[in-house]
Length: 140
Image (tube, rainbow, N blue to C red; front, side):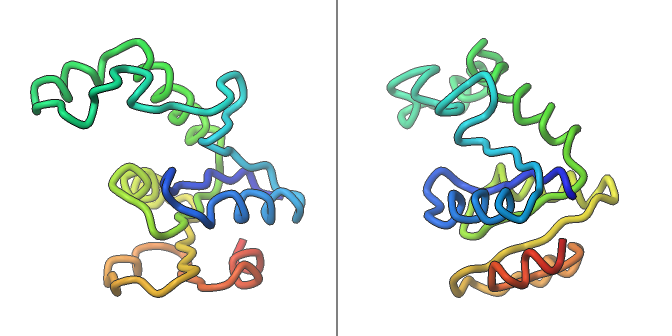
């Protein structure tokens, strides 16, 4: 069975279903929403309630905030542990950075597109692009 890092977004409605399906299939799965030792996961609001109003300098400074460092370390450790990445769309920059890291390391990286998205040619860099949970499970 695979050790899977699910890369996605807090706003993604499909992420919990993907985590559950992968676990039901017998895989070990890192869930950034509920990482071991940090229920509820990392939120920028835990660093500063006004995070959405930061200027660039505040953004850069707060990357080193202890709460941000802890969240980053949890995700990074999970990436080092995993042998597979599932990128669940729609998602943002962090998830795409994570998927790119996996692909760059030569680790299996799969894009799951449960709803229509703007086409992305560079997804050809990844091992598979699928649009159903059944195809996702088969591709692992």
